[in-house]
Image 1 (cartoon, rainbow, N blue to C red):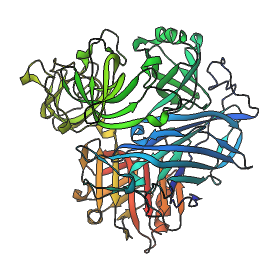
Image 2: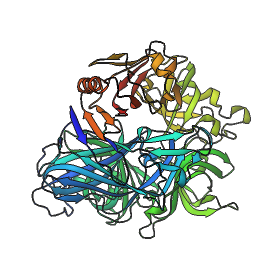
Image 3: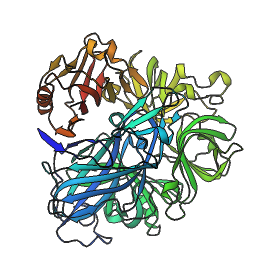
Image 4: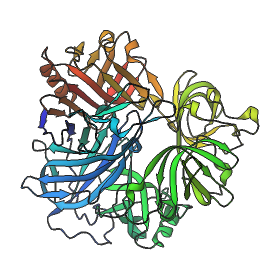
Length: 639
C-alpha cells in the first residue's frame, strides 16, 4: 500500500491517484527519441539526461466539452530541481481526450528521482457543456463551483487551481539515455458533480481527480503534434518538435515517429500510404505542422503511427477548421454537431479554439474530399449523415450570430466513425441494428432524410444496416446482442447499406463507466463482500445512491435492478490497475497497483464511522452476471 499526502492550494481539494506500476525502460543510445529511431535532427544538449514522455488523457464523464487552460505542469526532483514541461499556457478540451492520449512533452530532463509534480489549471475562460441527451447545457461561469470553497471559479474569486502531487514514496525515476513514461488521466466523472441532473440551470462542482501511471494506457490511441524537423526514409521515420494540443509556440522536446507500409498519410489534403506518404512528407519544409496518431511500444521504446496529417490537413493551420459529426444534410449544407473550431493560426492564438454545439457548413464541387486509410477519388457525395469529419474553409456567422463554415474552396477529411446498437437481424455480410449511438451521438439527434436511394430507403435508427466485409467474422453475434462497429457512413443518397464497417469490436470487452454517488453522509458499510478478489455491493445498498449508472457509450444499465448486487473484480486482461482511496476531510490519498492491497486498505478505512460518498470505476462489464472487471477505480471517503 502506498499513501500520498496532498496540500490545498487556492482552496482546492484534490483527490490524486498515482499508480506507478513500472519505471521507464533502460534503452541505450536514445538520440532524440528512441533507441532504435533515427539520429538526425538537433537533440537538446543535456548531459546526464533522460526523456520524460508525459502524456495526458481523460476518463469519460457526462460532458460534451470541458475546455480549460493548463497553465503549468512542473516536476520537482529530490534535490529541489524544478522542470517545467508545459512551456506555454495550453488550452485543453478534456472531453475530446476520452478515446486517446496526447503527448504533452518529450523533454530531456536531468536524470534522477522526481518526488512531486504540480499542475495549474485555469477556469477563467472555461467552456463546460453537459450532455443532457438532447441539446446539451452550457454551464454559466457563475455555476462552475470550487468544491472546497463553494465559490464560483470566476473573477473576482480565484480561477486557478494548482494540483500538488507528492511522489516521494513512489518517485518518478528518470534514467540517463532512457525514456520514462508519465501518463496523466483527468477523471471527469470523479472530478465533477452535476446538479440537478438534466435540467437548466445546472451547477458543476469541481473536485478534480487526477490519476496517473508509469505505464501508458494501451487501450487508447496516442496523438502527438508539432512542427516537422526531419525525415529519414532509410528508417521509415521522422522527427517533430512536440507542441501539444493547438499550441502555435513552445518546444516540448523532439520526438521520433516511426511509420510502416500501412501508415496512411493526408498531406495538404492528398492521401497516400507507406513509403509514398513518407516521400511526400520529406518534400515539405522544416517547420510544417504534423499530427500523428499511433501506439507506444514500451518494450522497444518506440512510437509507430497508424495515420499522419501534415500541412493544410492539420486543423487550423492554413484554413479555419471544424471537427464534428454530420447531423443532417440539405443539398450542400451540412449541420455539424459538437464542433471543435480551430481558427487559422495567426500568431499565438491557441486560446481561440472554441466549441459549437451545432453549426452550418457549406460544401461544393471545389471541396477536396479524402477518407482516412482509403485510396481513390472522393466527392462531397461521400459525406452523409452520421459521419465524423474534419472540415476546413472560412469561418463566418449567420444572422443570429451562430458560427458557420464555408468549405466550398476548402476540404473535408472523413475519419473513422463508431456505432453501437443491438442486433435485430443477421444476413450474409449484413447486420441490422437498433442504433444506440452513432459517432457518440444519440440517434434522436439525426435527420436521415436524403441518405437513401429513395425516401423509403433513408436510414432508420430502428433498422440501421451495416455492411460487413467477409474478413470480419460475425459468428459470435446473435439477435438481441449488443454490438459495436468502426467504419464509414455510406455515401449520401446511396443507402442501403447505411454503414460500411471496417472493424467489429468486442462489446463485452469495451470499457464501461460506473458512477455511484451517495448523500454527503455516505454509506458506512457499502460492501456486502470485501475480499482480496471481489467487492460486492448489494442491491439494497445500490438503491441508497442518489446517482447511479453503468454506461457503455449510450447503452446504459441500471445497477439498482441487479437483484444479486454489483460485483467489482480486478480485470485479468489489464496491463496495470489504477486504484485509489481518497480521504476528503484528512486530505489524504492512498494509491494501489494490486486489488488485494486496495481491498485490505478499504477494510481498515471503513471502521464503522467513515463512509463512502462516491465510487467511480471503469472496465469491461458483463450485464448477465452484473460484474464489472475493474481497470480503474476511485473510492471517496468522507473522513
